[in-house]
Image 1 (tube, rainbow, N blue to C red):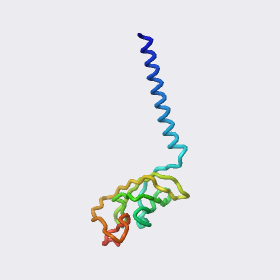
Image 2 (image 1 turned 90 degrees about the horizontal axis):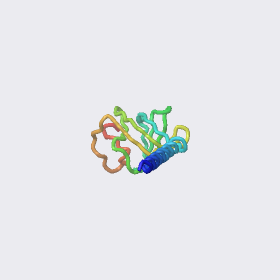
Image 3 (image 1 turned 90 degrees about the vertical axis):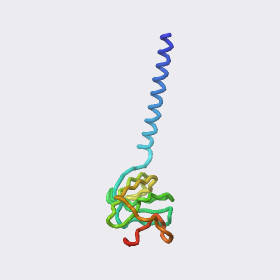
Amino acid sequence: MPLKRASNTKLSIAFAASVLVAVWAGVAWRLWFTERVTFEGQLRQGSLRCDDECHFDFVVEAYGGTRVRVETCIMPDTLRDWPGHPVHTMIAGNWEGERRLKASALFVKNDGWNGSKPSGGRPTSCFVPPEHR
């Protein structure tokens, strides 16, 4: 019976080691073999531009001012651009050139936006309250 326990223990150790190697390989691939970067910074006021509801870009005060291009129809409600309301962003994506990043993930935090939802005319992603235009 003791021989069987030793065999099961060896199998368990071998399985655990193979799982660790697989996880390490995935992390290594993500960190070293892709050009994906993650950083955070404050939105430069007046830099939010919208082509339509699914394509917009802005400048983040990181690395001397980085233009971030986002191509998604799902935009954070807290991404607003008007004076006196700082917006902090965390972005993950791939470099497209010097100080240009194409975002694949975007997280936004501001100091509390309590305005009403925008109505027609402008893309909702670029809504600025009338009192700040």
